[in-house]
Length: 195
Image 1 (tube, rainbow, N blue to C red):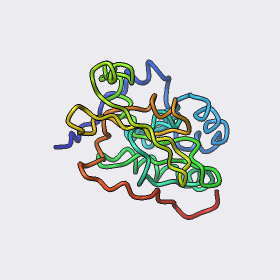
Image 2: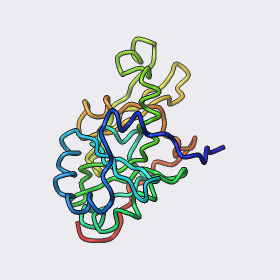
Image 3: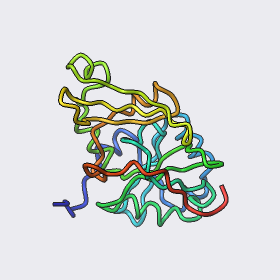
């Protein structure tokens, strides 16, 4: 069951600062995207109760196959709609790209709250020490490295993706809530528009 109550973002405001409005984010779009590419997390709010975060790719948890890739120019003009889309309880993250190459992500702020609450999730070294296996593979079409951690029975317990093995291992996280068991690893979809 999905909790429809608005979560308290006080912890994120303390960690990341006051969010910017959609209008302000549009006005500073290029600099915000560059900041996200360089590791910063920028909170964006729409109508004060819909919160999203512009994040580096390493913070887009799970495997990226099947996520929508939106060109940066389209994302800027449709930012309000994208914030609403990812903030929805059933919303998925959105990859933001330049020339069909992901450069940043837009995720629901509640995902960052969940990660802050679950900061004791084991990293790659802890998973290996616990007897799990981590498989790295390269997707030449999407130009991504994918890391998948499995338990002793072969069940997937964690996944991550990035432009390098290091990013993929850093992105290892519990399977995101929008993934369902047996969810097909379909190719990345793209939104139309210039990029």
